Length: 366
Image 1 (cartoon, one colour):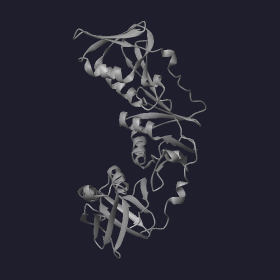
Image 2 (cartoon, rainbow, N blue to C red):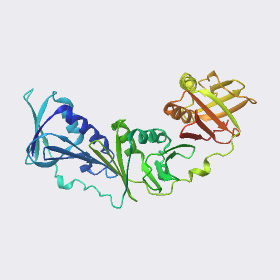
Image 3 (cartoon, rainbow, N blue to C red):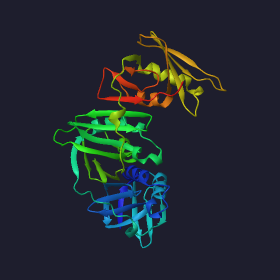
Image 4 (cartoon, one colour):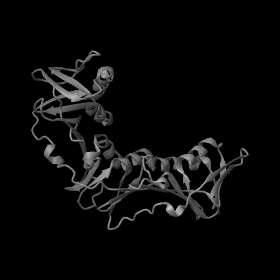
């Protein structure tokens, strides 16, 4: 196996492959990246067993073949060598990397490529194309609400279904819920919900563009997302996702409207005195005004008042700081409206004017 390649082309792909590798996995071969030089291309694979990554890039193939390289070591070498072309050659049980700009050579021990896991095939899949921008928008509005509690593994991903002609994504951790629906592809029949792990969606968000279409395929156990030259295949999360429709409030006669930036600025100003343990802030409503404050603790407290559209009696609602900040950072509209029934029941956060998404937040005890 022997090829030459531009560093600038290679380093981007190896960086992504390295993101997939799990540093916590005890199986040593999973810290390696699989390389296969053939047909004028270098095919790259990496995996943590639950998420598989594949891509390819153009190289000058001098001798076809395959090998595996330690991901972090190879990345370290690519960061060290000068810009320009380098040569990669497998010689028996080692790999030799040379550059022409400097008389620089690295020798690496290699491992058997036969030990590298075989990637699964998706059978009997539902397959469709969607606009990458719309799919990313759905992920952005939901992914931060996913639970990181591994004992509630069925909430460790985003729920995805098509119902009544609409594609729906939902994220929840049991104390908040993020919902979005879009008409992405009319040719796809309604399908039962699947739970997509957070990791594949995060990698897709980070490395996909904003133009064109992507292809999504899924079976009962696997999901494949194809974009540009990349293939991401992940196990789906098994288990029963909560019935999110039951927790969406129906009757919320009260509301107040604020400027999104005013709330974010107020949260930033008081952040230093927000209690780290419970992240509680208080929203105190009076006609025409919203006071955003922290609760008393040994370090002190803070308070900021901002304008809001509200008519009603004085009301105090305790909320988790990040449950407000995270959805507000994803909302693009200038104004946001909070709908509620009373201080003990869920708040619904919607942009003004209303769009295809909303967020449901459970209040905390005052």
